[in-house]
Length: 176
Image 1 (cartoon, rainbow, N blue to C red):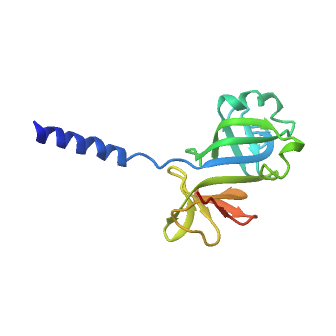
Image 2: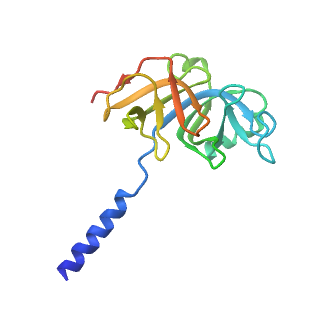
Image 3: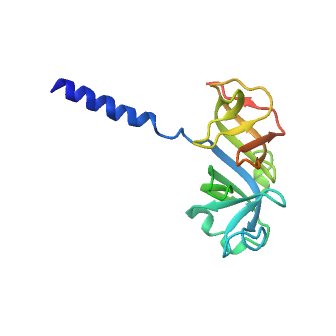
């Protein structure tokens, strides 16, 4: 019986190892746009953020629903959540919080068109990245693997569907 219990425990603990790594926390400041009307994808209107003329981030989550009607107004939002890539290789932000950018946010929130990513630095094929579930975010420059970091810059997705953060501000390691 003890052998059976040990085997069962080993089997259950093995499943925990197969979980996707925790996603990074993303805060982004950008204008609202429509995925269909502005970027030409999908069969109907969808709220997204416009990083630049060719890069949308599709918004999902209850906290962003109230901004659907303002999708064509270019309202600048600050949205916090987790970032993934859908089957069409488009960025998707599962929003936990969303609010309109205000004067009090200047100097605290990322600049318009930029993102702040908070997470653990890892190495992916010898290059630094932020751990972000199944979609690590590649970084430029040197970073200390295994350390938590908060980095700000322009977020992009390359032709291979990989996420990248082009840093504008130097990284700041969180020292606890």
